[in-house]
Structure formats: structure tokens, C-alpha cells
Length: 472
Image (cartoon, rainbow, N blue to C red; front, side, top):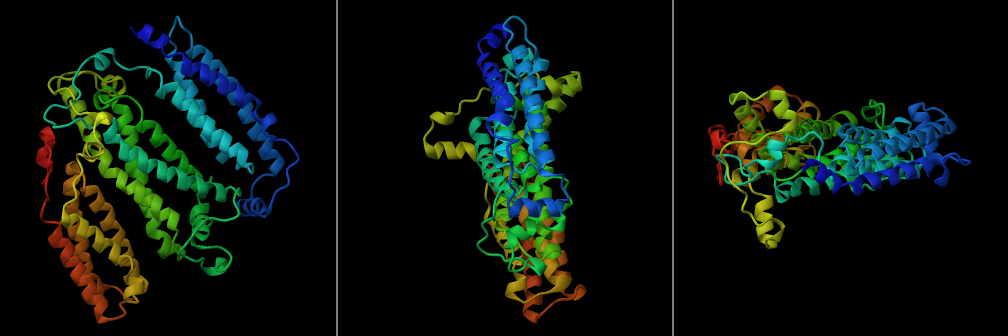
């Protein structure tokens, strides 16, 4: 049956083979080695980053595409063998695709066409290697067994609609990061910024977004960090749409990988937003939108992560090998079939299925509003120095942790707002930069409200087996 399923899905490997031929000829058809006349933006990037000559970088990019094209052709031919499955060849092709995503960044290509070609073909190679065909290495028992809905749960956390919000938000982040990365590589003359101006020596020369993404904080990365963000979002999109609705038990490693991309990297994205006015002195509108998208992904991804963790705990208690179960998955006792209508449902029903597991208690929404308000005390109360920085830092942390608490399985995260509230009450007497008594009362009232609003749990609609005891 496995061989027959493999034979029915050979076409993605043949498409990959054609993409390999495309890569092999790209340097010649797209003119990587043609006479190159850099513009002012590319010269600026070269000077700021102390980069190698344009000719050398274009040559390295050409060789990268040629060698990668040959590898994709070889691995695709092996993957398309109708008589023998070669799972390692599928994974090898996926890693070549990953390199294609990184190559334009590693070589700081000055060619927009090389950047677009490498990232687009790289994403397609990954999708056609392991996303569309049968995932190599999965357990037969896991694929053929049950259940769809974890034992003790009221719904399946891995349906297509459950993953839809993450996919939409990742796409928004991807498009924004592509723009930021293209500017950092010198492919664009400027970046749209409707609100914030540049500061310091860049005032009047660059807007806030351009100042942020060319700052010393950004330059601390060896590659363009905006383009790196686009790669992260690309991998999130690949992982979001990989496998079916039982992947919480058939692909635990994939669920964990997606959680790692969303949770820690989401925290890094929030951190970068936090330090913008404190360290650099201005804001980046596009960065704020991307960071918000990353933060909102977190509550929508937690339920699948919890179900995966419960499955691994159950498997361990059953005496199953942990690492084999983690990498190949398995079936599980109990649970039930998924009876939801999925994409055949009405738009309202689809929305209800997509957002299941996330609720919006008014207490948490008001806490988010307070956090946003705290970030504007520089303008509303003329706060300065340590007090303004404290309000900004605490405000964004409150927003982040409260958004996480919107997930029913993560509702206890709201208690982190209590120490934030205590700090806000004490901060006016401990920090300088308090401009008026109104600023003092604002901090005290906001702190007290955060403490009070963190106490009620809010409505919980669904059940989550033994995780229910942590939903307090």
C-alpha cells in the first residue's frame, strides 16, 4: 500500500526535476553575470556592511544556483523511483530548498531577480519534496490508526480550519518581511512609513522604518534580518499546511517545530519592537504589524502543542520508545472521529471552527487596551527617561502575555500581569522621568486595574482532558 501510494504521487518529484533544470539555467537566462551597474542603494548597503565586490557575489550566486539545480535534479530522480522509495532523497531535496532560501542572504545578492528566484524556487522545492507527497518516515500504525480528536477533548486541534488563522497571519508577516529584506539588500529605494520619522543623523534622510532596519541593532545580524524573517514565515507556512488532521499524534516533531518557530521567535520579534523607541528612538510601522501578527499566532497554535504533549506522555506511559514515537508518530487509545464539516461548512461555521480554543473575555481585552495605552505615555503625559521606558516595556509585555492568555489552554498566563501591575503602582516613586501627578495616577490606576483584571478566568468553552487542571 505504501509503494502504491508512492507511485500515485510521483508527479511532485517530476515537477521538482523541472525546477532543478530551471535553477541550472537561471544564472544564464536571468543574467546574473551580465554587466552590472549598481545604484545608490546597493552602493550604500555595500559600504554599510563592508561587503565583497558585486562581481564576486554574483559569481557565488551563480554557482549556488547551478550546483543546487544539479542536486535537485539528482534527488528528484531518486525520489521519483517507481520501484523503490528513497525517503532520504526527499529530505535531501528539502534541505537543498532550505539552502536556496538562505543563499541570496548569505551572498548579499544585489540582484532582485536572484533573490526572488532563489526564495520562490526554494519554497516550491520544499513543498514538492515533503509537503505534497507522502511524508517520508511516518509510522504505518499512526497513519492507519485512530483517533482524530484527542481523548478528553471536544474538538480536533489539527484540522485545516484550526490552522487557517496561523497561515493567514504568517502570510501577512511574510509579505512584510519580504519588503523589509528587499530594502536591506539594496533592491528598493525606500520603504513605506506613514507615521514615524528618522532620528539622529538619519533624520530627514530616512523615515522611521528605514532607520530601524538599518540601525546597529539590525546590523548585528550577519544577514539581512528582515529577509531572515521572511524565511521564518515561509517555514511556518510550510509547516502549517503539512500533513492532515491527525498530525498532533502522527507528526509530533512537526508540531513542536512549528511551536518553536512561533513561540521563541515571536518573543524575539516582540523584543525587537520593545527596544525600538528605547534604544533607537523611533518606531517601524511595518515591524509593529509583523510583530502583532506573530503574537496573535501564539494562542492559535497552543492547543495543538498541548495535544501533542499529551500524546507523547501517554505513549511514554504505555512503554513506547519516546524518540521513535516523536519522529514517526503512532495511534492512540480512546478519542473519537472528527465530525466537523470543515471547508464544507458555512462561512460562520468555518469561523467558529477556526477560532475554537480561543476566547475573548472582556477582562483580557481591557488588559490589552491598558497595555497599548501605556506605550503612549511619552505623548499623553510627557513622561521621559526611565519612567517612559518602563511604561513602554511593561505595556508591550502586558499586550503579549494577555494575547497568549486568549488561548483557553494558556489562560493561566494572565497571572503574569499581576507582578506587572504591582510594578506599575511602585514605579512612579522608584524611577525618574515622571512629568506630573497625572502620570503618577495613570501608572497607579493602570497597575491596579491589571491586578484586578487578572483574577477572573473568563469563559472556557471546551475541555482538554488532564490539561483542564491547569486552566485556572
